[in-house]
Length: 130
Image: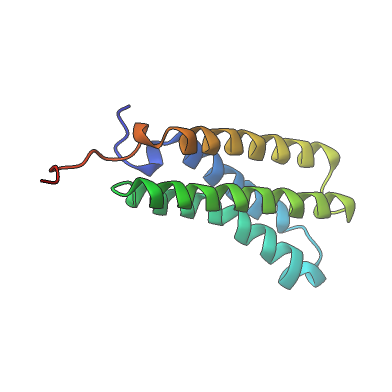
């Protein structure tokens, strides 16, 4: 598919972009949320891009690659919960919430597509066993 690295993957690009947008958005969250909601949503959103990079580096081992992608999907789900809490707490507008949830839905679809067909991304065995 012509991927030179994880930065070429659309799922990485979208997850990184959304993590940065969440960072900017959470700058306006109340100070009392700094060590709870703000830290949690930043951590989980950033973790997706970081785990994609880690999965890419493990693509010699398809099972490890898939395992890291499953971790990414879990972090995406966690981020969605934090987004719900931020909206319901009045810190995030309906419009921003919908935008972010839609983005994380797209990320999840891409991740599960990769999980279903890891051979498209994993490196071929260099030498066969005898």
